[in-house]
Length: 192
Image: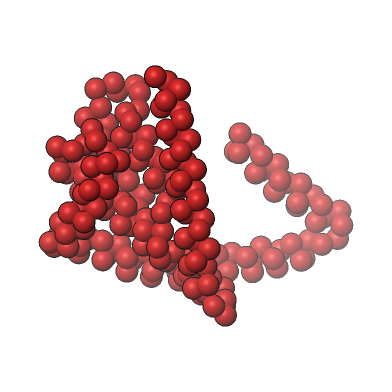
């Protein structure tokens, strides 16, 4: 559907620019916006490389074991089906840490790996397990203490106070997590 909508929008904008006599402005804005996109991508790449590197170092040291032990009580409550599988608990905790640090790009591959491992343990391959549903809810809510990516974007755009987003992010993520977890419980109870 989007493969149809976006080309239509682009075609309409080009036709409008031609008929309105704004073709030169359209051309200059295309080059300016692509330049801005490349600058932003390069600035974000540094942040992502740093945090992905830190996550890889943490994975190879005892730090991830300590984080897993710290998050273990929470993981056992949220994922009772995965109590005996230490590897899945470690993958879930790595994903949670990446989300807490606001590293959505680092959290995505870690989350996919955890979902793949949970799918291997899932007895019904065509249906999501309760643990998989809880994991999706947590990832969608994306609990963040330090919204690193957003701070980096605000900084690259010249914000006078890029960290002012931290407190509103806490409110938004706590609200989203609470509401999504409550709606998940309602769905589970309605199935039984």
